[in-house]
Image (cartoon, rainbow, N blue to C red; front, side):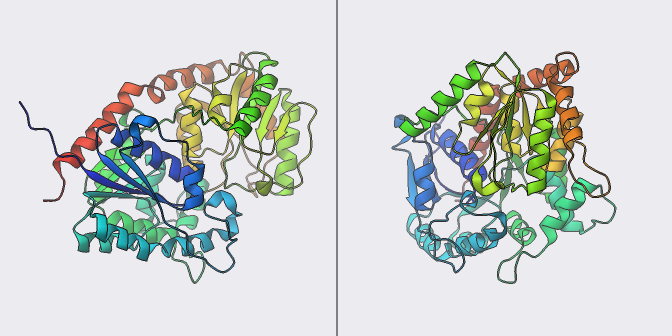
Length: 435
C-alpha cells in the first residue's frame, strides 16, 4: 500500500482587494478539502466580510487576522480597495507593506511548508528564503494578461503595441508615488522569489498563454483551474432581503431579456461616462439591472427602463437567473469567469489593467462583443454602446454569441476538470516540499 503523503501546512496571503481575496480563499478551501492545514492571512475587517467556512473545513482553515498599520491619508476603516477611491490605493499599499514585521513573526513561529502569496509583498521572498519556506506566486489574472505583463516588465518594449496593451504597460511600469514601489517591481520580485508560479486559468482556454509564461519564466507554471466560485448562502438577513427584492424584479422580466451591468469595485466612472452608459442602456430598448456602488459613480439617478442598485447585490445569483441575457462588464477576469460559468454572453467595456486584453481574448472566443470607443480620444458613446448591446441581446444577432458562451460554460462550469487542476497542484506541493 502506497505511503500517504504527510499533511502540509500552507500559508495563504492575498493582496487587500476582494477580487484577489476571494479566489485565494476559494483555493485555500479546495486545498483544505484534500486534508492539508491552511493559515489564511488578512486583516480583521476583510475576514469579517468573507463567506463563512463550511463546517467540515473549519478545523483545517485558520483565519489569521493581522491588524493593518495606520498610514496617514488612509481612512481609519479602509482595509481593502473596495473601501477607497482608486487614487488612494498607493496609501493602502504602504499600509500593506507595514504587515512585514507581524507576518515575519508569524512565519518564525509557524514555519509552514509552503507560502502562497499575491503580487504585492515584494519583501516576502527574502524572508521566506531565510526561513527555508518554499513560495508560490499565485496570479489571479488571466494568463493572457500575465504573460503580456511579464514580457513587458522584462523587455520594457512598449512602443509598438496596440492601445489596450499600451494602457496596461504604462500602468505596470509607472511609479505610483515616491513612497510606494511600482506594481512592476512588486510583480518582478514576487515572481522571481517564487519556486513555482501558479495561474488562475486552464489549458482549455489559455493554453498558448500558459506555455508562453513557462517560456518566459523558465520555472514551473501550474494552472490551478478557474476557481469558479460557489453561489454562497451566508444567512445574512440584509443580504437575503436584498436578494428577495432583486429576484422579485427579475422574475417579472421575460427570459434572457435583462442586461446585467457591473464594472467591479475599482472602476470609477466620470459624469460623462455615467451619462453615456445610462443613455446607451435606455437606447438599447432592454430592461437592465445595474449594480453601481456610490463611491464609483457621480450623482446617480433613477431610470425608466431599468434599476440602478447602490448597495450589495449577489452577482452569481443574478447571472444564474433565467431573465438575464447578457452581462455588460469591465472584463475583470473574475467577472468573465462568473458570467461564462452560466453561459451568459458578454458586452465588454474595458477600462484599465488587463481588461482590454481579456476583452480581445473573449472576442476571439466569440462569447461577446467589445464596445467600440472613439479612435481619437478613447471616449465612449451611447450609440456605440446601444449597438453592442443589441448585437448580443437581440434573438437573431446574438445567437452566435449565446451559442459560444453556452459551449464555454461546459469548460468554466466543469467541476471535475477544475478539481483535476487542484489535484495536480496539491500533488506538486506534496512531492516538492522542502526537506
